[in-house]
Length: 491
Image (cartoon, rainbow, N blue to C red; front, top):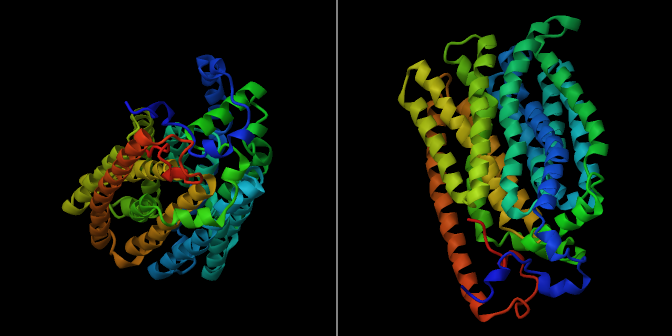
């Protein structure tokens, strides 16, 4: 064992600002299993449900257009497949543009103000989609929906990193991201019930999908102004001893710096994020994963309808694959956190997609094509939180991590743009041959890049171990962040 092995979880900035750090808990406090269990249970009960509902509503309000399409939206607004793809693309342009500035502003403005404001505004816009009478009205709504929702997913990942150490993060990210798979299941059930309101108030059934779901989002958004704490130090449900413990664990883990100066905003750190090889390998993975994810989210009801089911039946048949995705995502998150194997879980998720798309492409039997969704949908819904956690784990300090997370989601939503065209216009229903071939190829490439990233991070950790044999943490140059020899990359 090298002489510094006992410090492998120390914050790399420790030696630079220890004099101004908050008082550390006593060793008895740090090792108190009762306190530890109580703290994480409180955070899980008070923060995770709110964050999960945020993303549930985000995904529901963004992807319910696929249910509305099956229920008659495209026909009533006299839209071609090309125009439908344009409507989806318009959502992504402001969505992508908002992600980086939103993440950089999150800590400055305060997540307790910024996240609820975005939620409330997009609830209003979702509702307005139910009163549009023209294609251009829908385009306007989709643009502003993307603008308000753009910072949500990267913001929620960053927000959770304010509360949880690195090796406890994926289960929590998966817990809220699994809300996306639940929204896919719930959206089908909800749409199945709501479209029966066709004609109520002289409005078609698809309009009520937007109106009712948007109103709920708006009301929940108002309630989150009092539900979300700004940071562990301001969490009303934690006592002082518990707050002290969380802050200490975050500093010990390297999730936060030893003082505000380390985690303060810096344009230098924004630039540093763009120089990290692991950020760009993950960016490629995020692009491919985003293409698959949004392809499944936006077109699953249409794919199922193409297998010979009625519009109403297709809504119901979309539920089981997403329900399975929820279970697979949570099991994968547990394994990833328990055994610290982000990369292996990423590879497994990609292989599920390979199997699913291979089945859909290789068979003309509707039962097998439907069964393929039980591989491709769980695969992509497991991949997304795994990659999100992997990226958040391997960048520090705060501004560098915020930028790295935003880069990942910019690439994810760029993939979403490709998905809207692949399945919306470039591939002919019901076989979607071109799209399936592309998504299958992307899944294979994702396996390769997951392996490349594991090997690169393993090599960097090996080099850091050699440095720790000849250097103490006090002798190391300050300000290195995740490049510090005492910052161990998650594999």
